[in-house]
Image 1 (cartoon, rainbow, N blue to C red):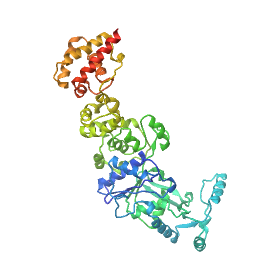
Image 2: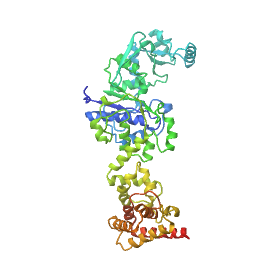
Image 3: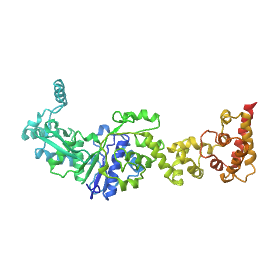
Length: 498
């Protein structure tokens, strides 16, 4: 099969009902990649007819999340396009028109059953151990009686008249043909009593009118997939290529991942929400690389992808319907790779806000010097703060016990710190190219190990056990502060020895 279809139009149609999560991000990504690699169009549409679940600010978060991940759309509520409006809340009359068309052609009907009656029917079905379904009472009404009741102002919904004989077959690009017996399908509600269309009608109408060629969406729509195929056929429309993506499993691999798990994840520095991942120090490049491989693969060994790589290499024929466990260790791995792939200036630009957020008076030029020596030790951008905050302190306060090198006494450790002061003080500056050879020569002649000497110096100069490379760090700190910190360390060690 040709995996480079032409005239592709795809859509990402989220509901503004909460935070943008990984499942939404992956769905958007696969749609975006298919559009870009084929020269097609990526449509951003807001499905906001569920007023009760609407969350203020959610649409803005969706827009910011997509832009942060690097996905720009060709048509949408903010930029318009030839098939607008792109908010379903602005398309109510369109859906009503198409619902009436289904009624006129005998594919839908008015239903006047009250919620109380439907509850009783469900209760009786449960007693008989039948799956809950509409019992078809209003399906049997004559068209004339139904219209008279509508004209009289009686409350009603509109249901799809599902065929009760035979079977329905729909085709999923990943799973092949899916066949269901029609007697097992319900007469789903298409339009609620308040006149608003539900997803089943609104989204099918929008996808047709917006000329969507490929519907790439979550597997939660598989149970109603036959209904959606039947709606297309009732209108006589050509169906899109249907693609239902794999389910995300919890990191343990047991059970479907849900939004409820995020509270526990955040304690470990992880989240399934895009906004949180950004604040936790993940890069858009790392997140995109990670989610692209949860349900798709290029080959059995290539793992590092930029967005540009993915546009070139992505194929809907290589999507995998098997459930994908969320692996946050992989996210850390990919994020580290993409941090190291950033040029120093871009990395510094991204690191600076993390210092400022913690109240550290960092400046861009110093962060630019830190970036190339810190990047090898970081999996997330926020790790730069505990790793490198010592650069912006006037003094550091090492623990005296940590200044004592393994296998040495406090007195011997103090002598090493004093020797470092003696050897480094005559140097014109603290450039690594001058300071490191001097200290390595001392190590070679002293009988102490590099680990002992440089360990003491690291604790003294940075105030911490782990830091970016020592001599490059000393160069950034500057000669005066390095000497002062070594002298202070020697004094602390002498006090330990008393």
